[in-house]
Image (cartoon, rainbow, N blue to C red; front, side, top):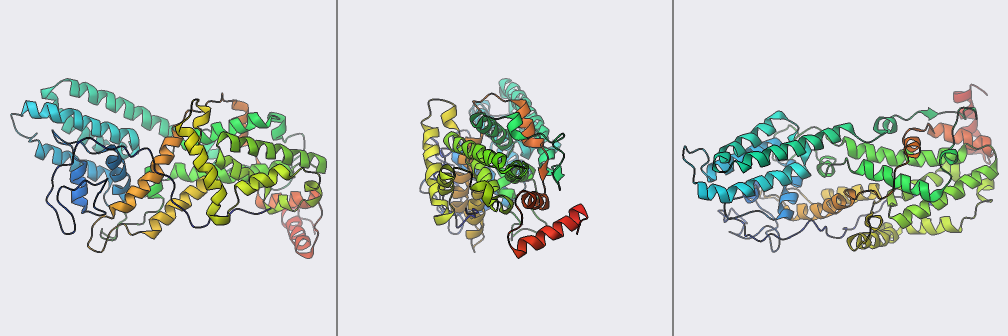
Length: 473
């Protein structure tokens, strides 16, 4: 049995976020190394000044940026400018270019510009709602829309709807998924509790198909709260051309909570295996989890699959040789092969591409499910970020890098928006999120109590654990 470790990442397939727009961007004055009027996506310059990129985000009466450009720039711009400052700059450019500060407006031009401005604000608030948590950002929205409202009262109504949707999104994000706090600080057993107080997972759910579906429910609920900007903010230090102050404080709580959920599931699997006193029961639990893992693979839930395999590969579990001797391991080895880290997880990436293709051509909501092995996705994005500079020597933003980043993050955003087709069983999902688990020391102690230490290293560890946890020598 092997413990999976990520190697050098490969690029994931392109996201369907990249949909070409029908209008050409406005012509801007070229700076060194830029080409005048050249679009910033297909056949785009690989770099541009931050000012040029901001200008390309601003709509006019005759121009609206491509959807892919909006997502890419809003995702990556926070490395160079705070979102609230970017919004202020965009609103200022709109007011200046459309002469919205004049006492008399050009109503015909504003009526062509107004819908495009509202569309940009709608896309921004929908995809990056956390950019609007500060009251000052709402003030910018109300100010710029208030200037065009006299030309068409429908603009004010549309703005009201947009703000309502934004407030609902922010309220939902503040709530967070069930067990978020519990997963961060789980109750840990250091020794086996009395059988009278410990509930076992098989007592809550003995059907592997049902458990795989409920795991998928938990995964999708937790994924839904991760904002695309968290992938950028997880790796940012600061823009080298900026002041010594970082662009912002870390805002990656949901991403970090999701990684902790993976770790919790690993420990929960190991706990459930090490808890029973008899090896026949332990073998039964292992075979149960093998069946759960196989169903997770069939569903497209690769994150739970890897957590289960990782839990079974933890040393306190893998050392239980007498227990494993009673397990039919053929199915387990097939799953291990699928998630083998060899060749930068080549087998898993092939399976992921298959699931992604199935999702694109899906006839049912079940076929749309793609839950990637999250730690590897994070590593892929990390290596992409580390492997290329954010700015080129001339100070330009390396936009080519951010197009690739947006492809990877955009694909994930599509997957996380899938509605879970399985009905939730609260008793099972609550157990998965809150059931006490062994600490690492507790796992080893339970393992040694189940099957005695076999070599000097294990004997010394057991003696140390008994001394520190049980007070025995």
